[in-house]
Image 1 (cartoon, rainbow, N blue to C red):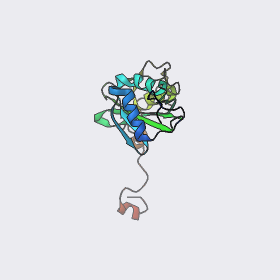
Image 2 (cartoon, rainbow, N blue to C red; image 1 turned 135 degrees about the vertical axis):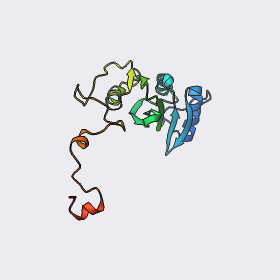
Image 3 (cartoon, helix red, strand yellow; image 1 turned 90 degrees about the vertical axis):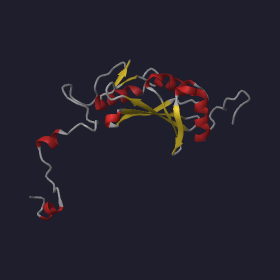
Image 4 (cartoon, rainbow, N blue to C red; image 1 turned 180 degrees about the vertical axis):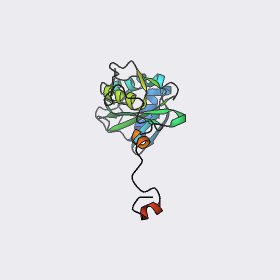
Length: 183
């Protein structure tokens, strides 16, 4: 329910369709393609506008997305990456997903750790696993892989070394399966 000044009462649950209209009103041209899917509001954001958008989502009292739930990426191979950022508003009971296109030839986006401190770990993991650089990240060190590791394991083009050096022991076709897996 809106107050006389057009703002919402604090701690009022907002339906996804209403929240998407509010998001469109507050963010205007900073987001594109706002839609509701499976009870969540989704919006496309250009990398250059990402920090501005997440600041507004967090700081605007009507949006109040004070919790970062998820940040990762999708490798669309030749089409590049899609950074996915999910934030949540406890007071509005609303989830917002941001889809950020990241070019394959220059995978760089601004860090949002200055807005959501919890993005620190997620961005480091994304850099290590996908090779996406987060400009302005305070500590871009790896998390899981040894320092001399080459490649980014979550890229679709990444090949597991075990498949290169050691053949798969299982049957490859029905005739092999009949013989117990041996050709």
